[in-house]
Image (cartoon, rainbow, N blue to C red):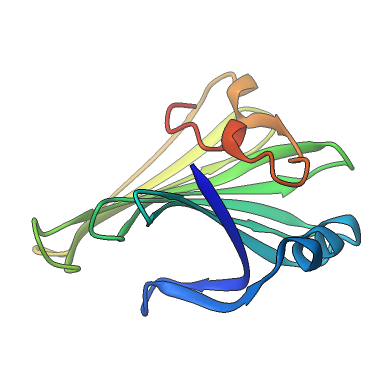
Length: 154
């Protein structure tokens, strides 16, 4: 998997804003300034990782470069991050038309809130539950080392 860096990724245009060289991205990482790492497979974005001092987010992309899953991790300490929000999107087969979405919110005490929307009929389903959330914890990534965050099953 290849990686390149940029200031930000545009889901609308399906391309990066302001590509950064590796040294500049490394400097951003060391200073905890925002930057984005784009991990590609067969020259297509597979994962887009946004790194800031407060959050690390991971976007998962399909072959049509549509984001179908996003994880938002909150930085809890210098080395620990906690998966705060997970978002899933389903699309019409070959278009960018969204047909449903699911948002999950997590707290460290095990509380989970869920909201599912089906756009065709406008239905909304909400649920609350609790569970052990050990899998929601991870470590703040070292520069260039992002694959441990790119696990769909948590």
